[in-house]
Length: 263
Image (cartoon, rainbow, N blue to C red; front, side, top):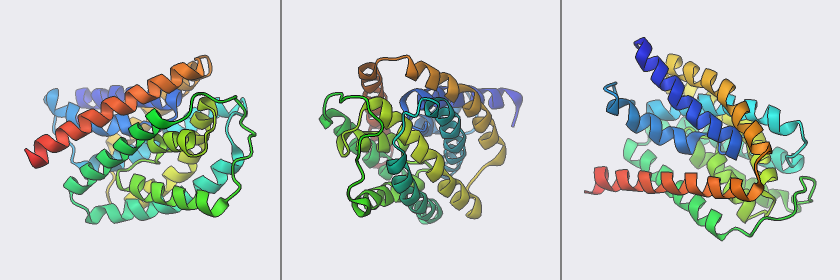
């Protein structure tokens, strides 16, 4: 891998990592299509879907950790929800990450598109901004919470994500918590759960070491910067930004999926 290719990967990683820290999305919803489609446009070899999911898994682990350090200082995440959902997503992401080696690239693209569709739908149907309180009691039915998180974990593990880009919409739509709390809680869950995806993809030999480490470094630098911007941004603005990012990626993923596999 030449230096120019390494620089490109770093810059692409920084974009996704900044958005991760700012919007609590882990970076996967941005990083997956960016790493899959942009390198060939700059004259570099294309990564396969399996390569990208492995690289994204590593990046999400480091970006969520770095972003949580900044968000966690204000105690803005819901600890009980993070524990219950983090545990279940961890188990699910390991199963999904390991099982992804038996799926074709067509199925990986399709699953990613479906998750993006669900995320968009929930963002547009979630309630308006609620009062900012991370301590709001939410976990009255732990089994239901963990069941939802387990399903999210399995599918997000397949695409190399901690599930953050679907977790924030779930936290807003299903549990009706404030945007800033949802962002911080999502990063906490992502930090715990992304270990499952990384471990599974390491065991199943789906991680390219050098580009993954470059993405990890970019994440440790850019994610805290995004988190600091997030803490100074109006929650309604954050919600609009998150919705736009998910919607744009949703359109891009479906366009490419239909163009490649249908048309």
